[in-house]
Image 1 (spheres, rainbow, N blue to C red):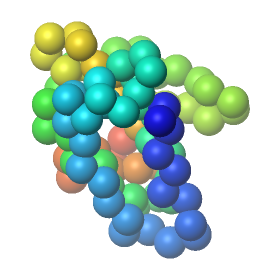
Image 2 (image 1 turned 90 degrees about the vertical axis):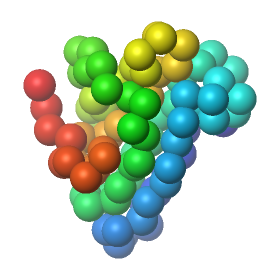
Image 3 (image 1 turned 90 degrees about the horizontal axis):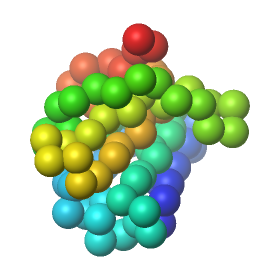
Length: 88
């Protein structure tokens, strides 16, 4: 699994993710999360923000965990750890 899609037309969906989860379920240590505005991603290990990236026309904020072993990409407009992800 390299992507979780919370898109269903409603806000308020949530998912909790750890670096271990990403390493276990993805082929390359990276996970993209997309969804509706207001959907929530809980991933407290991911505190380092890297430059934003675009994938198939969608802009994602790129986060790494402290050790750099996993990459999390969160679609702009979603919530990450109770904060709306905005373009940087």
